Image 1 (cartoon, rainbow, N blue to C red):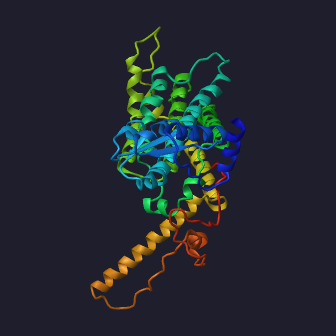
Image 2 (image 1 turned 180 degrees about the vertical axis):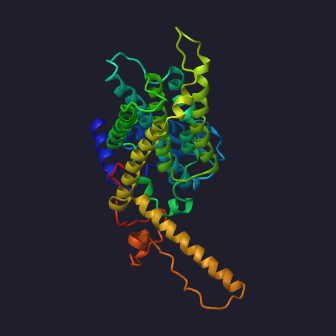
Image 3 (image 1 turned 45 degrees about the vertical axis):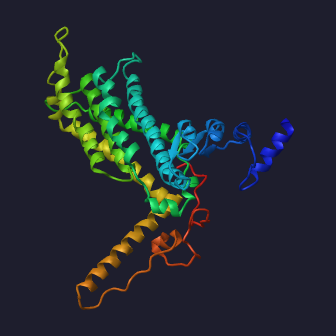
Length: 398
């Protein structure tokens, strides 16, 4: 009955939990299908037996448990865990981190390609919309494959925001961070346009003054300069938004970015001379012109200043729950370090007065706004508890 199904779905959405008893495998799957069709929720099904397979397959995400009833549920699931209690870590820790990493991967991929595309778009204004590309075909083909691929790949796998204990203590962080929204898309689009404009117009303005014996005002040299600027500003932007620096991430940043300069010096010699023209040696002339390096530095300064100002105003005036909890986490780390230091001094029998032990804040409210010590009730939150933060950002896109 369609009417009864709609009423049941409406009632279920008003409840915190609904228990469906004595249901057959098909009925379990139909309940999941009903909630998928009547609501916009992302469904997850978890089970440990063969009778749970239809329900696991019907849900957006299926989780199987290694149990005594065989491996049917595991073989038909997206994720497999050993015990039901591991679902908490799967969702609140690994799910939270993976969602943010994938969101950063998608946003950065759109952003860097938009910056590169709009750099070439602005060039068409001054070449009569002929379609001539300012970047050579070989560097353009390697932009996503070599020069910008590894850093964002490492970030999408190894970037960590908050500690596991913090994510489990504040489960509301799972719901408060919306990484992919329309606002985020339009913001990335506008930033790509702006960064592309900087990459084109800064060298265009600098090289409009024809001076110096190493004249590199030709189209190909200016195109390689614009390419270098795009590569520089998108790489620096990634360095500013990464949450945790690792040795591998640092290595990929240096390896992928700085390999461009020797490649720029070598790749023109790979082309055969055509009609008396060759680009071989153009890199040496470019590197000898101070305006070339000035264009790269000015472009990096403009884009880095913008990104730092944006991040600063967001943290100060529109902080997300994650920003507040990170502030609390850093304050706790400082307090724990001070306690360990005092304990080591006492263990060595050191004399003299020591600073009094600082009390570790129980909740983010006490550490926000300069580490104020205002009692906000019991902040020791566990799974299923409630959190009252100074700023709630569940509806904020970024």
